[in-house]
Image (cartoon, rainbow, N blue to C red; front, side):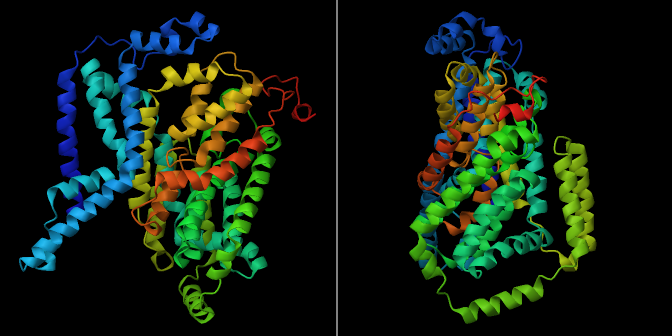
Length: 526
């Protein structure tokens, strides 16, 4: 009840602000929403390379554009202050608790009577709720410029919520006890090479789990990798530097690890069908580079923190042995149950574009989980639903940013385009960046390569840079006092981002567009 009341209070508070915004702007007549890019009639400005003139013209044509982008900017800035907001909320709670104890109040009374302001601040400090909160402001501005029907139709027909729904289902499946045991067994084979030390598990998880993302999808790989890191590494309480370095390299590796195939990484998925990029094309032009970058980044970080890994290994062997024996006894699961779970995951991945199929399959899975309850852990949907809500808010805002992203991307050469895509990805989901690049006319194959390479390279810089990142943060945030700090995450991800950027920067000038059927994949590598 406490959390429900907290969220209701926050919604009421922010809803009031939204009503004020609705009343402050004069409505204009709506035509098509959002405004199609070809409706601005600024091709001459785009060809001349006058980007500021293009953006000024588009704001003049549709003033709503500026408001939508400002709201998105405020939401991004909000994520950077979320941890500080939570700290202030906890201080207020502590101050109120101390005062109530001095008045002789019981602990139960203290728990059920938190200060109103602290509850509001808790709501505004929840990272997963931030973009959803700012959707209320977006709704208010949209209604004030247009009308309720415009916003309703935008949400119902223009915004694609398939990916958020898919992430909820695949996260729930990947975090189940049978799947985690199976993944642990696979990665344990590689960790055995280092005698299952914390460093060996660290290397195994951060190398193998991201590559699994090319086959089980990146959200599933993130869930598996983050949960195994929590069990095998973070529980040992590493230093803050190593903790942030680890989550940073995890995010980067997951972002690039799904590029071996054409269906697993969201930014690749957005362009694969339209540009006719196949699995061989991805493996030849992206996959091996991603693997090389992952290995190099892991080795550099492992060497840099070698002494701390040695200290983590000094944990009492007796205590670890006792814990492992208990876990092994409790977690034994028949192989046929693991196989059924894998089949459910396969069904979800194959039908990732069809919500009725993968959601229906998930409902069947829940029935199977109940029937095999002795071999299942508690299936918590809280984290997957919060992550899905986060992504739903993100795609809602992102769908209104094409007015400025598309001309910016279309105005750049290959190398600047890759760098710009990397930077933009840090402030917008990389799948949105690559999707908007498909709207740019006359994109060369090297430009296509550059924008996708930049998008996957920058996918670890922030929580919002790549769709699976919120899942990783949700799982690992409990190991970071006050939550994951965005600035420290950026620092932790910076070195592997630079390494991957340098590797991907070798833009193949002679690569052939697979849309030209007369060119073979073999020719693309010559």
